[in-house]
Length: 93
Image 1 (tube, rainbow, N blue to C red):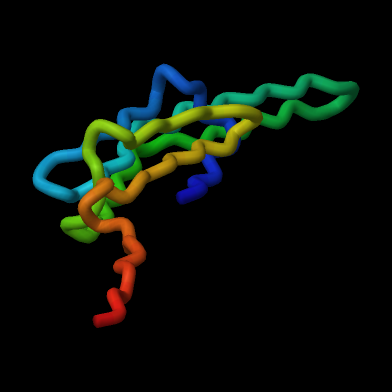
Image 2 (cartoon, helix red, strand yellow):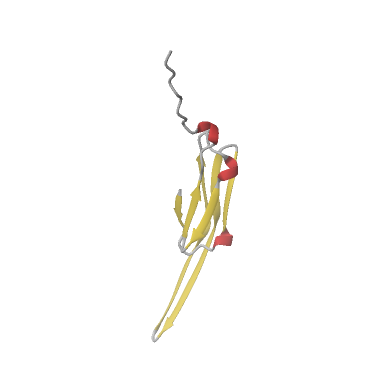
């Protein structure tokens, strides 16, 4: 799963997994002020965000990882070994 979070610092993002619900939440605080000849511009964007996604039962909760780089949060979820397909040999009698 990829979540675009431009202007958000990694320490402003929380990722949690509880009862197969993956939650990404945090707070965005952006302030930009420009002073030029004859004008002043101030831009502010702020607010909390929260997204929750229910994952299938076959997810291994110990193999969920999250990484953040250049405003992009990447959450990787692995299937449990029991949920992976396996090949069954066919015997000939």
